[in-house]
Amino acid sequence: MTAMPAAAALPPSDSGPGAELLPTPDRPGLWVRAVPKLDWPMHPATAEPARAAFACRCGLTRTAIGHIGVAALTADYQGHLTVCPLIPELPCQHCGQPTRARCRGNQGWPAHPECYEAWENRVPEQRRREQQAKAIASRDRQRRNAARLRRDLIRQGYAPDLAAAIASGEIPTTDDDPATS
Image (cartoon, rainbow, N blue to C red; front, side, top):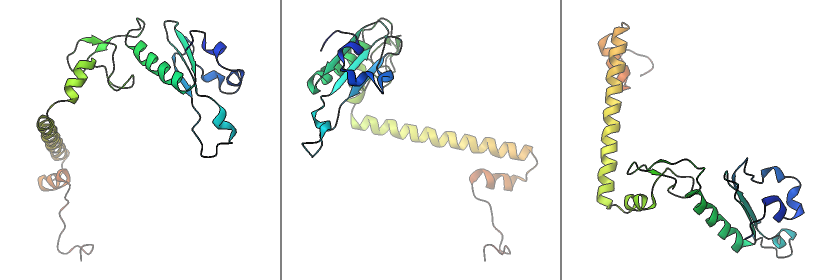
């Protein structure tokens, strides 16, 4: 890993098409170019080393060449996101305290590592109970919505039995209806 600016450390082939994708402090982020290992060993793409660059809002830029360097740079980028002073702190989803850390890398919701680990390692029985409670809450919400729809239909002049059938999702059919014969 080097501490040079992203554009200076990468070979000239990356200053052509696609160079606008390289991160800068104005456009912070992580850029990785890793060619898959092809089955054909003489393919020209297998000779290209993996490359990566990252830039942060605070002005920190790093680059790396090679698979090991790219892996280290990615870990460095993830670590920097938790300590960068320009990234806003958000409340932890578990305890409510401010944090810059994210669960599952930088793509997840705000969570302290110890809070997320405790949440992920909770007892399976507790998870099952939480899922059941969510299912019960969902059914209650569905019942309330159906009751609200039934009430609104009756206010609009529909017959109560028809409003109940519409709200429940089952429209009554008659015996003399040709569609049902």
